[in-house]
Length: 227
Image 1 (spheres, rainbow, N blue to C red):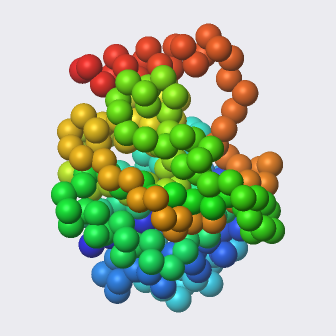
Image 2: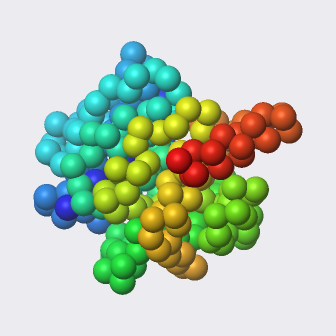
């Protein structure tokens, strides 16, 4: 069984398009868990028809504690053997689930594929996620400069016992999941693109953190890995 976990926050502009790109790739026993961190907004309204017409879609309320905790909430509520992370504003491309599951069949604990970076209207910029992030495995290199991008990632639910609950002071959830995947098993990278990664100036991830904050984050995540 596959669980897609989607962390939403004021996602009404793009979320229906994203959900419609996900569901055709899921089987009848799979699920899409939408954790809404701003339930008083219009996110539910944007996907209400889909929720009411497709029993695979589960809508839950987040805890209002930010993106990382919202993903933790969604993952904690997932029932699947394999968990796919999803942002609210991207587009899944055909073949994503099939390609990722093939890597799990080869023994991977975490899988990450490439993505084409697009603007708000889905026009390709010519950049890819792997190119921009200089994607690669390696615990030390991904502590120093993270290349794990959650919207392109999936992992075996076996990893939950290691990653949950998320440690405090994480820089990002995807970095933690990727690093724990490396610590406890195999991480597989897929060079092919299976996502349109939308950059539109309203993305929930990303921030203007200071150098000191970045240093503290790296020390914190390194300490958590050693526990």
